[in-house]
Image (tube, rainbow, N blue to C red; front, side, top):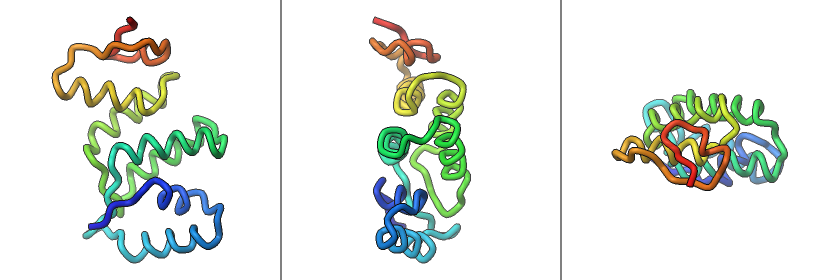
Length: 131
């Protein structure tokens, strides 16, 4: 199994740099199979959403479509896929960042009664409390 960095995943998905996009696509086609998927960790998921928002200006709906496809792709293995899906659903429904949604999900799974925050949007998520 290989791990995929955010920049490789972005090039594969966005196809904006011909040389790097081609290399990323070839790598994923060759190395990421159902039997031996490419590993995507939680940090990469958070960075992916941030890059698509900030660098590419994608709408939340477009990012949600991209994320759903990444989560469903059998050629990828996600770190804690259940937490990723739970965070994704919270992200789709609310105004909080995906990273905050994932943070709250992970904290709850580790027994946290709530996660303290100053973030007004995150404060509306289940398991968060505004300080």
